[in-house]
Image (cartoon, rainbow over all chains, first blue to last red; front, side, top):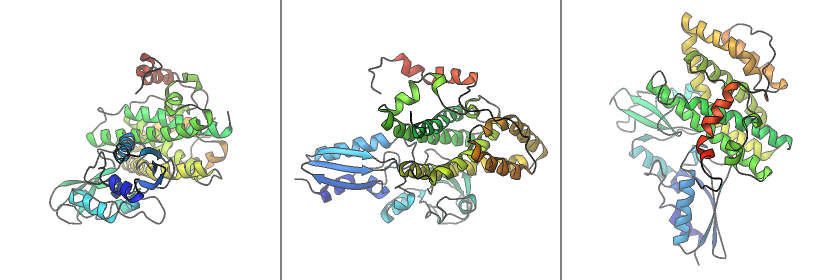
Length: 161
Length: 223
C-alpha cells in the first residue's frame, strides 16, 4: 500500500511544465495528499489562473500516482490558497540559479505596487541591485522582465502575487 | 437562473470578451513590449473567465467551454465597453484603464462578499489584476505627460465614458467617476450609462471568429 510520504516524494519529481528547474512541490501548488483504500487524493491550485500548464500538471500527477499502483483523484482548487510566498526556500534558490530573480515576499497589503517593483531587485547573474523594470509582463503570466545596468543582462523576475 | 450565476456570467463574459479584444494586439502592437503585455493580459483575463465559468457551470450542470462558446451572441452578459473593437492605441489604453479601474472597484465589493467561494476567487483574481492596473496607470502617466498624449487620452475617455459606467451597477458608479475625475483633474459629463444586455454589432463579429473552430467540429469532439 502506497504511503502519503511516497506520494509526496513522487510529486517532488515532477518539474513545472514552464520552468522545469523547479518541481511542483517546490512551487507550493500541492495543497494536500490523502491516501485511502488505494486511492490517492491530491488537491492543488493553479499558479496564475490563465496558466495553460494546469492540465499538464494534473496529468503528470495522475501518471506518477498510477505508477505507484494507486488510483489518482486530482482536484484543482478555484480559491485564493496559493501565492508566491508558498514557493519553498529551495525552490527560490533553484529559480535564482537558473537566472530567474525569485519573487519578493507578498506585501502586507496583499497586492504589490509599482513603488515596490521599482526597487533594486538583485540580478541573478551578477548580484548587482542596479536593475530596472523593463516590462511588467514577460513570456508567461508569472514573469516580468528586468534589466541589469551592471552586467547589462536582461533577466526574468518571477512576479509576486 | 440565480442572481449568483447571473453575476458570475456577467464578469466571466466581460473577462472573456476583453481578453479576446486584448489578444487582437498580439503581433501588431506598436512595439514588442506592448505586444507581450497585451498578450499576457489577455491570457490572464481568459483564465479568470474560465474559473468564473467553472463556478457558474457547477450550478448550471454544464461546463466552462459550453458557457464560453455554445451560447448565442445575444445570450452573453458582457458590458458593451469590452465588445468595442478599437484597434487604435489611445482608445485601447483608455478602455484598458477604464475597465481595470472599474474591475478593481467591482472586485473590492466581491472580496467582501458573504459568499466564501466568490470572495476567495475575487481575491485571487485581484492579485493578478494588480499588474494590469499598474500597466494601465503607467500608460496614463505617459500620456498625461505631453499635450498631445493628454488630448488623445481625454478624447478617448470622453467617447468611452458612458460605456465605462455601464460596467458597474448603480451603487459602484460614483467611485469610478471619482477616481477617473481625480486622475484627469477635470469633471466628466453626466451621461446615461450604456447598459449591459444591449450588445454592440462588433460582438457578433467577434463571436463568429471566436467560436468558429468549435462550431466546425462535431459536438462529440474532444479537445
